[in-house]
Amino acid sequence: MADSTRPFLSNSSESKLPPPRSLDETIEQCIGNFGWAQFLQATLISFAWFFDAQQTFITVFTDSQPTWHCTDSVCNTSSNLCTLPNQTWSWDFDLHVSIISEWGLQCAGSFFRGLPASSFFLGCLIGGLALSTLADSSLGRKNMLLLSCLIMSLSSMLTAFSTSIWVYAFLRFVNGFGRATIGTCALVLSTELVGKKWRGQVGAMGFFCFTLGFLTLPMFGYINKGNSWRYLYVWTSIPTLIYCSLVRIFVRESPRWLIVKGRKEEAVSILQSIASNAITVSSTNLCFAVQENQSELNPDIYDASKILVRKRWLLKRLLVAMALGFGIGMVYYGMPLALTNLNFNLYLGVVFNALSEFPAFLITFFLIDKINRRDALIGFTALSGISSALIAALGQQIGSLQIVLELVSFFSACTAFNMTLIYTIEMFPTCVRNSAMAMVRQALVFGGVFSPVMVAAGRENQFWSYGLFGLVIGLCGLFVVGLPETRGSVLCDTMDEEEYKTLARDNLLADSVVLV
Image 1: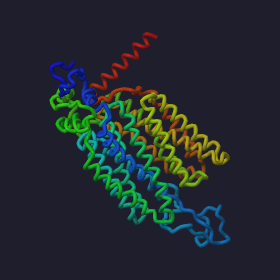
Image 2: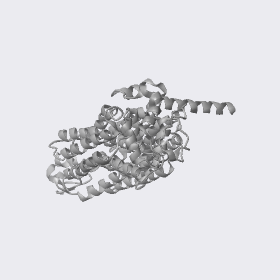
Image 3: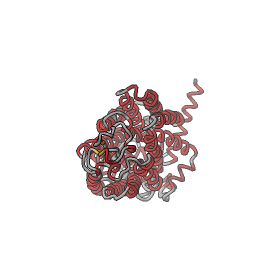
Image 4: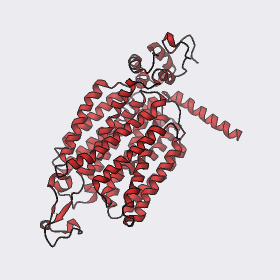
């Protein structure tokens, strides 16, 4: 218990405030309210999701098979294109509108045609594993976000100059490797700059920006219709480079991370610059707040991963969250790619998918403080699974109802995706939060690695795409029953705080069982 003669806050006008008992409460008194400085920081940081969305789904247009027409009476548009002589048909547009027509991949195997998309998700997976601990250890949240955006933008620009499918697939791998930690760093950094009351809303801002980025793709694709696919990569890479310069100049590092790293003077400076009220905090007070947890400061580059594995209860949370993320990621990344398997306009389909993320964002933004995480995740994963399975079970006989079921399934997966990320933030302390978030996001991406292959197989039988999508997300959603409920809980900074909170919750549950 802290001695009352050693106050945490240095402001005589606020002397009536009770001394906070933890580091979280110290920071909470500084940034608990939501001021303009925090709003501007959160908005700029969250905008990284905008560019992330563009690179994630850009292959829906650049790698799609263009439309074609017959040039000879022998030709029939209902025939398999690969069975027709080359002189009997022609593409509707120039060869350069897609990698399929430019490099003659229309008759290549489904694995070969899906190679660039799978390479991107594979790069995301490996990049997340390789870079996940850097934001918790040496680089910090801001520098990791800047590095990831820079790699993503430069590789996107280089992709426009690809000379073959192999070069293209390699650059997509590099692109995925670079963007792997963007969502994690943006979400963690933005939520660590605000108090717990606004944590869910600020986290949802990133999802909103992701939706906007997704929504710009069909607009770019339609404007670029009939032109080279390379322009899409140029148009999306240049704004990202500009964004990198803005991050370098204006974005602040997380004060929580600076404190855990022992850089208290910098943390004090940032807290004072973004403080939402008149309270200020001194370096001496922060030093006292963290002195009991000095052993957790300055971990080596893989220390966060060691902590996640060493603590049994922490490892259980991580594995369950990753299993949940795998199922959600398979549907979330697979649904837009599978639109080509439905008898529906591709541009409208992508627009409707992007628009369906808005209600998912609104639910996350306005209801995140009112709904239990576990119940909501079970409900949304079940709804997504049932809707997807119905597409495979009923097939073409339901006609336009297919796109309705697809939108319900995608909307449910989007909402579950958003809530899973916020849920993960709440379950892990600051010293391992970014690493845990990165691991869960890698599980989401790992589900996406399988999506292009399943979509290709689903062209012949929709069970291998929509059927498996529904089965996997439904089963994985059941794992959430093994996780603790975190609605309304505070963010812990150290393992001791998290373990104390967990023990207190377990004792409360045990007492309630005894009373019953």
